[in-house]
Image 1 (spheres, helix red, strand yellow):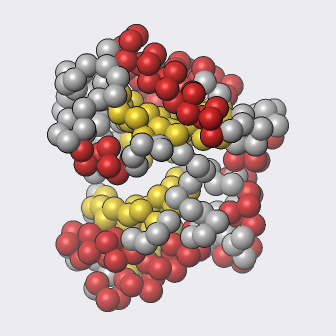
Image 2 (cartoon, rainbow, N blue to C red):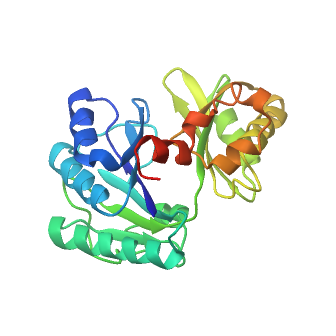
Amino acid sequence: MLECVVNISEGRDADVLDALRAAAGPELLDVHTDPHHHRSVFTVIGTEAPRSLATAALAAVDLAGHVGVHPRLGVVDVVPFVALEGSSVGDALAARDDFARWLAHEHDVPCFLYGPERTLPEVRRGAFRELRPDLGPSAPHPRVGATAVGQRPVLVAYNVWVRGDDDASVVALAAAVRAPGIRTLGLAVGDRWQVSMNLVDPAGAGPGDAYDRVAELAAQHGVEEEGAELVGLLPAATLEAVPQHRWAELDLGPERTIEARLEQAGLR
């Protein structure tokens, strides 16, 4: 079984978001929407739902004039395939390559691949500068931009809200929190600040570790942590590694696991 976590550059138009949910169909496990990021994260299963979702997003969303605090390459911004139980890394790589070929051919969208070749941060830094698209046109699509299509292990997207006085202190805090297994951005989100993280090795550095690292370093940068936010889903094993008395503090719970949503959808 393959999981795909499709990041769409739309987080405000309720009608568009409803249409995208419908396009994803019964393979949709979760949607996380953030109007300040102007971004929604759709967790789906298989290889057909990502195509249906991408087709709907490309038809409904125009990147021109798009403003959000999260960096983006395109309307269908990031499409990573993840091997779950019963699938292999090779299956996820094949799905990645098939999706990128389809997107480039059917929709004329430049695609950058990540996984064994390079990381997603390397794509973001180098796209259309040091890096040329692996598939599709050499320049961004004028309306929908480009897409990073990847293969990766399971990760946990996790944010910690902080109280501070300026962007610089939060950016510095995010840089200090960064560690093996923890990728970070410091973002101004409305009238608040956020250390936005990808926990790329959740068995080694899970949500509790990330939250505690922010809390430990916050005072040194003149800020204070004030709550956590799980984006999307996490593996049951990652949840079970966190003491149950901390689940509420860390915005976790058994209903937020990949396994629970698969059961709920009748896919497990």
